[in-house]
Length: 276
Ligand code: SF4
Image 1 (cartoon, rainbow, N blue to C red):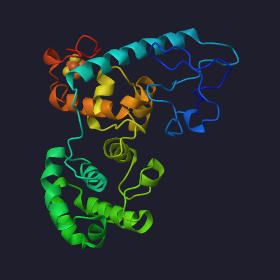
Image 2 (cartoon, helix red, strand yellow):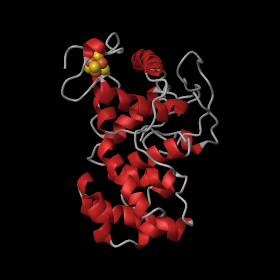
Image 3 (cartoon, rainbow, N blue to C red):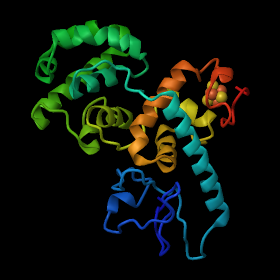
């Protein structure tokens, strides 16, 4: 585990803001590896490595970080210009519907999920009704989303726990959300960011994973590590928006099999342009 701030030199927060002290009383903002949500103000960033050490500053690592920081800043600028209204593609009317739709979206397209959820929510419109529903009936409705045995168990179990432990309301913290069956960090980030407007992390789905690699934002393959890299490079208040924009870009331009580099507004800054 690495400290983001372990010396007397104030940590650099990215952008033009320059060195800015972070409150030492903020335990959540100290580490990346623990995945605690940072209590940094909007627009501030983590450092992915310690700036100072007993031997002093590491200029090479600092220079690399600053280059990546500028690169990320330019990518964010272009994405925001290209996708000013990017939002979650899963149709939902409230946090619970979004939660269920996100669980169903694992290994499935959002289009398919959007075909299934109207029937599901018409038949079982609340956590209480879905928690009591016969598993075979749920399976029949969600069958086309794939992995329907596990998904049926997860959405029924999540609804039951929401009723039993959270008074019928979707919890608003990542720790509580992660207690629900079928909910891992990606789903929790979707719900917190989209339904509650809380930037607790970056959603790393298949599109974000692919784009992070192609755009030179992360060399890792595990979603947890990619998320840490993205959290270090982009301002906290952009994390949810960044996820939506990358997902849109991955669907429309930088597709898995045939990226349309010629049409891509990022081709000037993308290290993979015309090479994939
Ligand atoms: S330039 Fe090509 S590889 Fe790079 S992000 Fe755009 S479409 Fe993807």
